[in-house]
Image 1 (cartoon, rainbow, N blue to C red):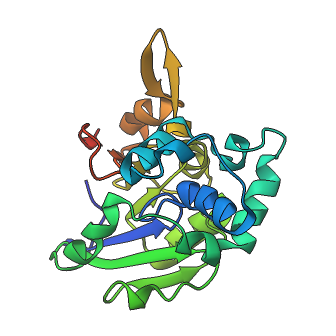
Image 2 (tube, rainbow, N blue to C red):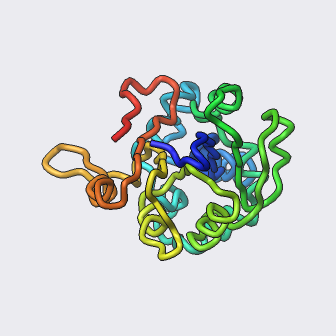
Length: 229
């Protein structure tokens, strides 16, 4: 389900560079230990890096700082993330989706891939022909404005709460749009020993809003499949 312009398929993908192609939730913990000596409950897995990553992502709070200090508020955490984004990203492992960027660019149905960060990251040093965007990737107004200005048809995002705000935004037309959501602990809730999306309306709204929704695994050895609704 893609947007169409003048009868020609032109997929323009926007990737928000936080817990999508790199795992900054893990990078924050790595950064805090490496530069500030702050330990975390997952350090026992450090010799088994992938197990460490999977455990962090499975149990992660949106505010990853709560893993090491429950008194740190979310606003403070994300201000810190934005102010040290380059340094934290340098300590962040690659997500599995990272390897698909250049492959997608070679596909005829993909016209452009945009990667957005809160600071300039020189993404063209890593990816060929990717368009770099710089804006507050945690602000739904700036995200929707960019989508509309650039004719974006697909959004890869880390946070189901932020995704719901985008879908509900008065300036966002979700018809024939594709949303890809990172599979990460804070997007889910547990009920009766079963795991469900934290906001089930995201799935229910597909019929009325007419969009496609995908859930994307982040670790490469996660034994569950990607889900496309």
